[in-house]
Image 1 (tube, rainbow, N blue to C red):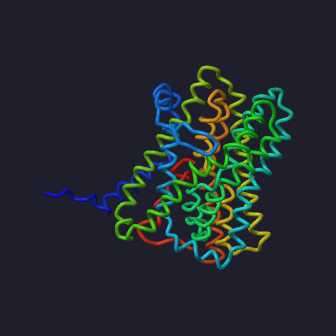
Image 2: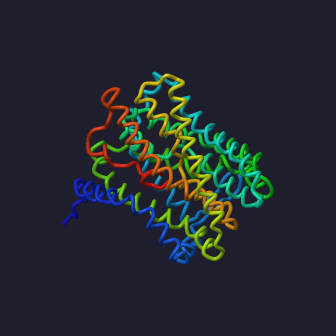
Image 3: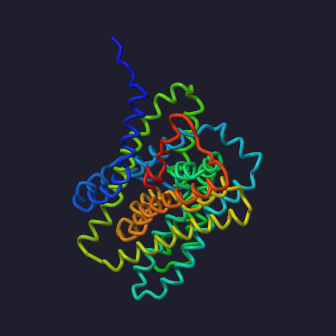
Length: 379
């Protein structure tokens, strides 16, 4: 007697239902972290082994394992043959990849000048450190969903997500080194140390390796088997992403409850909003300056504005465990970038209808978010 494999249509149905309720799922994960932070803190301390790296053994945590699975599933959805099309027009791919690295760092530098006016220099550097961890991360996988829904060039968005991810062992240390110059004290020293010693290795093992594994598995799998398995793997990735959101938020919220600091929370939210809005706007301005077609402009806008906040949150919890307020701007950014992506989606889609028919994917995966840290992976 054999056991029947789960039917893919049922998996797609369950996935669609989960995605419809996803807008409320992330705030609920934050509420759970505020109400029952103890459970999350216990899970965060579970031993998961060590990983040998050239810079020394690194302790694995539940957060790093969950993030690895989410990134693996995101890459598993990419058809590598789509990316070869971009080799015919490498200019936009190079410009978008550079923008994802340079624009957030530019905004971070401008914010640092404002933070110099703060009476609490330590708190200001802590918030800047959180923003730096966001700025250093590659494009969120969710940009593929939002950008395509708004009429963007789907192939260009996917290419920018993958290029920024594969280059992250170089770009993450570069951004962290730049951020160390605009922060002070222990935060500046920690960012400089990460940039010089472990940033590239952590990016290679924690970000690039799961993505390469996903690409390799997708290339090896027959298309029929991949289509049957993906809905169920995406459901698991959604559950992993929600769990990751809860675990990341527990430390920050437990500290806020023990020591309420509404001014710091307000400032973290405002700073995250400035960085998020500015990144979207600068991406759109870059596209206009390059005289890109509307579909390409939408792709550049979303990939410039959406960074992998989940990876940044994992880095904050593992590298700054004694400074939970570093997480505050990351958590705020994670929520705000989805709100702004929804607004940009509707606005740019309307512009696309005026300039021509938007390019949208077809097939069962057209409406399925790529669980890589945007809308669905809470990156």
